[in-house]
Image (cartoon, rainbow, N blue to C red; front, side):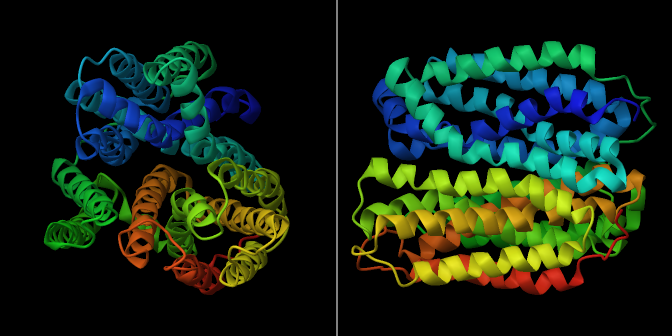
Length: 448
């Protein structure tokens, strides 16, 4: 890779951020969709679910396409699908059409994020891995927080369709710059592993759908359990199939043989389980238990975002120079402490303490994420970086869905009220504890 990292980042990071924004930006528009289309909440929720499921399928397929057709071609096709899907979403005449358009949008968006990290990791090389991926991850951390806020502004001022018109406009701009910035890479002969693709996409889609269903008032009913059991079977079959196929598999599982890769993947799975519930649960806790209004609850998420934004690049830079395990341990310890204090809070807790705890969680999780990701990529030989990105984003999605489902289960499938108290914070405490333990097995890689 001869291009400068900074030049690549000008198109890759905005593209990945745009895709990530669209995973959360639609949530605030659901009431308007129900009113405009004369439908119900359950049907309107498919607008969000459709994107998530399509993205889950696109992740492994995009990884294979990057090898077969080249990174540049795959990125441009993915951005085209995302932009066309955004435009179709903006002009959808009914909720079914909107859901189908979101499938097209998700098919492009799902491929953009792993492609972004793959190209940046290859361009950075082992010596700059931490600082480059830390900076990129910091920007990407804005996505889940900014999505609902930006969506709310668009809905209140211009209408929900402008969420997608603006996505299409930015997608077109990123595509145009990508055309001139990204260099052509030589495609490699690679036959599509259709059996592996069917197995891994079935496992991922059913896993996400089952966990999403479990996060509804229905909880872990027979439908959710059935889907999760089939998902687990499909993952087992894919592990068997992928091990036999080796580098010819849709996702090269030999990446797990690299020292330190599996612990890093486990940490990022737990990160998903700890982080995604924050966006879903913390605002509910602030309102239902601490007695704060909606505006204050939303503002209290800002310190978390600021902590992430500042610490991720710093932690990545430090991981280029020091043992990443120590940084991860420090981040996990701070996260545990902050959630432990949250267990003792309630309606009389000072607002300043909530803000300080939000900041501490952002700092702690930021100190876990970028060293773990950079450690994962350092552990991989160049030919397995693409497979590593695919695996990373699959487990992040599943970890996030699992975290939300467990949180809803702990809430009893209802709103978070004073009757429930702070008990649901046990879930992120368990996740942070698991991260601290897994950090012991991160690879100790030679740094500069």
